[in-house]
Length: 331
Image 1: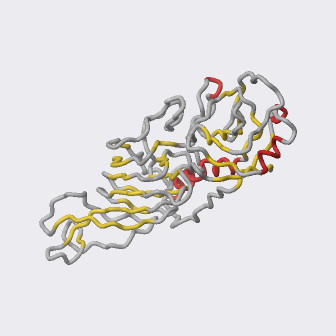
Image 2: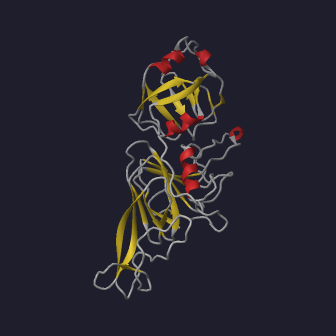
Image 3: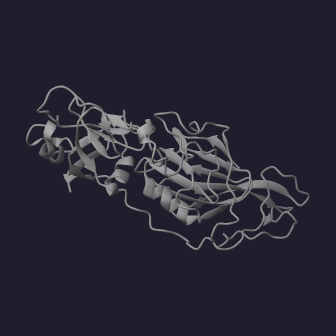
């Protein structure tokens, strides 16, 4: 079990979403930056679609009541593991619950960690103290029972993903454990005191990876394909979109990234009948300022779509934070 001591600015449970329900008006949802969640899951031996925790701007504190292998990917932030240990009489160092000296080295990912002791547990040999151990991004590490994972604020990027071996085992709604901020499906956003169950690990393959390279967020350029409604704009509107930088608005969220920059002028008046929308669609409302749809986008929309992001750029868009400047480039 994982107890949320502090959720940070915004935290939700996410897997790879609930595809196949758009005809019912249900968004796909899921992790905004899918490659980062997939990577974190692979590092702890989970299926890639296992549910994890998506953090916005970090700032979370998670207490593990049972030990678990954990990995963190996405927007890089300081990671500290605060774990309990027992000092021998006289303060001679950490000892195991039985009184023998305890190893302070990290167990290998494929191995079985030594038994830990819960924070606050009484001991005749000494007393319980807590030690803070920095951890690395994109590498599996063991959180002992009573350990607390503390995540700072990302230096760049927006969303960070915490995967735990076994996955976050909240109830499934329409085939997914994802929280959807638009429809309200799935578990609510995490709050202080939220307790998250962890799934079984008996049938999972062993962990065989010590670390993975941290992917570059690549925030500077978003590649797009034209259309499908670029004919609703004046000639040169797509070139205007790709010419100058746009700034990310503070009104952005999991539904979409709102941009501020050059006005995109329409060639037609009126609005389209509502039609299907996809993640990565660059929709242009009457204001002429583009919106890039993310995971919780509405299944339909009536504003014309001038372009659509490539799959790789969609993950980059999910890591844009307010104030970032970005350019569009025709693929």
